[in-house]
Amino acid sequence: MTGDDSKSGRSLSRDVGPFAAIATVVAGTLGAGLFVTIGTASSTTGPSVILLIALSGLVAMAIAINYSWLATIFPAAGSTYSYVSRAFRNRLGGFVATWSLWLGYMAAVAVLAIGFGNYLQVFYAGVDPRVAGAGLIAVLFLVNMLGIRRYSVSQNAIFVLLLVSILVLVVPGSFTVEPANYTPFFTGGFDGALAATVPLFYAYIGIAVAGEIGAEVKNPSRNLPLAMVGGTLILIALYMWTAAVIYGVVGDYTVLANSERPLSTAAETFLPLNATAVVGFGGLLATASSVHAVMAAGIKLPYCWGWDEVFPARFSAVNDRWRTPHWSLLTLFVVSTGLTFWTSGLDQVIAISTFSYLVAYGATSLTAMYVYLRKPTLRSKAAFDPGALLFVPGLIGLGGCLVLLSQAYVESLPVFVPWLAIGLGIFGLYWYLGRRADADVGSILDTLPGVPTDEYDPNIRGGHGATDESTVPDSREPADD
Image (cartoon, rainbow, N blue to C red; front, top):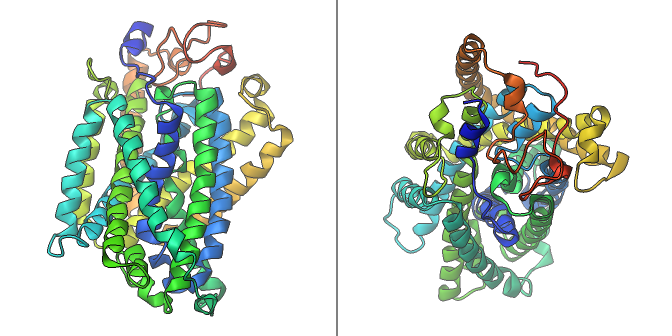
């Protein structure tokens, strides 16, 4: 599969515009933050969640900047995998950094789908959240199967409706806040605040999902940074505003901490019943849009591994009509559906998912600094040049990930370690088969996953397509694996 024609035949279509890219980041993330974790995270720290959202947002913004910068150099599918493997010329590094992320995406789909089921109980009290979540996954599986263009249209519509439903809560709620409800601000001291950082960072897990669909975004040098940095700014503002409202209108924060639907619980204190239902509807939209975006992103990793010949080739195969990596999508659908019934609780799955994201986010932050220091040719091809200031988000992103990993590893390692061992076994098998077949690894790494050869070729300067000379990496270095 190393031939150019074969790879172009498995490429993706650039059908995602700037609004859909921003909707992927914002609407694809809000379900995790506003409607799943923003209330329950207060169990160890109280109303100080408001401040911790800002601090987590600082780390998230740093990571978004790192992703944005690299995305303009490598406008490919798979974000972290493509950035690490192409910058270091090493498929193993990219694979290790993202193998756990694939598990994280599948776990995130399960968590968010269960959240959808919880909000459906606002309207149908007797529904089983896991059954409802599995039904949602099935519906969105079909939508994603129809291709990225249908995904864009549906995600845009959900995004608009979602923003309206949030404003129904936060605008009137802003006028009914009682400052006394914010005291005591820190209820669990430093340890309690630190314990809340993992679930709160989970509220930002979608900041880089636009990078996963980088091969499908139009004008990626402009629209990918706009989506990831601009979308993260919108998220921080919405999270802080909403948190200030719900903790300001509810006299006892433990009511929110113990609620499976914290926004609806807060709405009941000052909104009439029909408005509360609107917020419940917003919860359905938010969790559904997050599942939608994470599914679109999660199928790109096995697609990239198959493209690079370190995973079964069928995972990089695409439907001729809709250009969808259908085998990758089917696998995610089956595993995520199973996880909705397997998990013993949201906390464990959130920890596993967040741990996986942090590994990838830390690797990307490290890669950004590495490219700036050691790869001047690549650095010169980025769409924007922050200069040495790039080390500020690089260090914040990497340091923040390491701190958060120290909190998430206890619940995650029992799953992460055997999962990583399985991944290394698969990689080793396909690496061996490639060696026996005398695969040209250098030629493989001279392509970008999901990008047609005539749009992206290291031997073409000023070629046609959505990318141009500014996105062509320096391919003169040998591959390491």
